[in-house]
Length: 107
View 1 (spheres, rainbow, N blue to C red):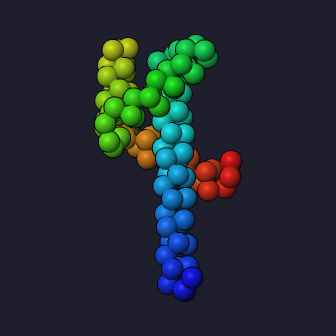
View 2: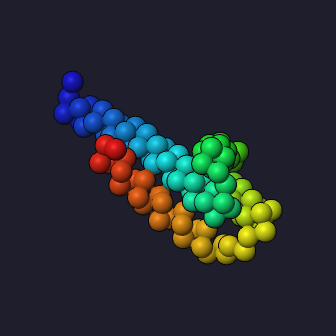
């Protein structure tokens, strides 16, 4: 193998790892977001876990995070809660950063 091929394989392996870590981080963010929303809606512990799993599943509806946002915003509205779009999006960003940190730390 040439040095170029070695470097190419290393870059490909790093790309795969980065993508895997990002997928895990976003799934973790979605779970944490679901738990946060469940707390705001005052769901029981068991219902909160089920709701968090539903938020994780919602992310597979369409590419991007809009499906997750729509689920959370719609559920808040259905529960009669007035939570702003900015608050939800800010929480999504905050939890995404925390989840990425934990994934990179091996947690």
